[in-house]
Length: 70
Image 1 (cartoon, rainbow, N blue to C red):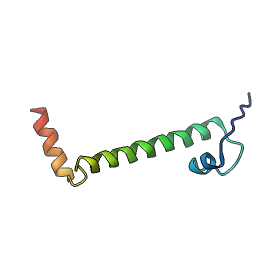
Image 2: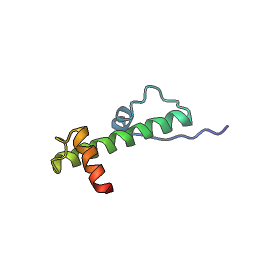
Image 3: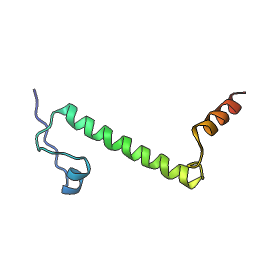
């Protein structure tokens, strides 16, 4: 097994929610994936608000999908 040392700022340490200084590779990738997912969700919410899509209901969305498939 190899050891990889990575330096992160205090802000990054907090942002990624690290609770210990020694992580397995899977713990590191899980933390990174979580942050990528959260950022994608935030971007989606911002996009929806910008284009006034945030008021659509699930039914509205289903109707638009059905109409687009015709």
